[in-house]
Length: 206
Image (tube, rainbow, N blue to C red; front, side):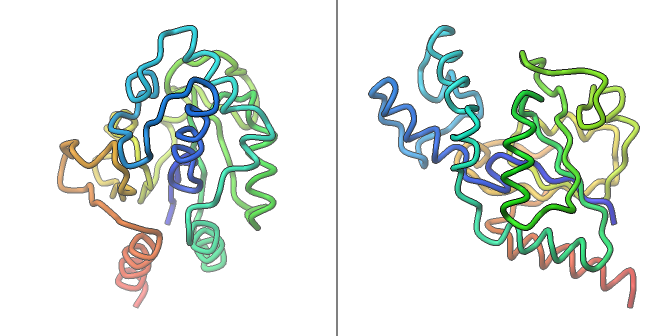
């Protein structure tokens, strides 16, 4: 099976790090469980200038490399690859963050996992015409059987795949969102995600 996996807040605890960074940079105390919006500007009540500073700080190589792994993430991806699943990490991080992001994966035993920076949100720092960067036209030519995603803003990027099963990693900012259709399923952790994929894989290959 072909599996799409988002990076931030699926593989690693990005929002928890940003919560600490907001205190350090601006004295804004927004605990992880109180981050109700995917848009950091809204969640942390930042103006455009402070948002730019915040995003730049959060994407420094040393910061990206410091993000804690979401428990069970790398183990699950390694297991999927070992049994023959085709796993692609599709992240909205700007391509300028590719090298430290790739190094983070390598350090977590995911050297064989493909990673692409998809220009989801038109952010600065996106570099076109690179083997590891995707414009939307290229992304829409790809197909997947499963997607692991946390952001409601990313759900629209699955509209071209009517049979895609979307495993929504439970986070505070997606708990009140309405899922587009019955193919979306909330998952509390990587164990539940792994069990769902394993169950269908066994059903297809008894």
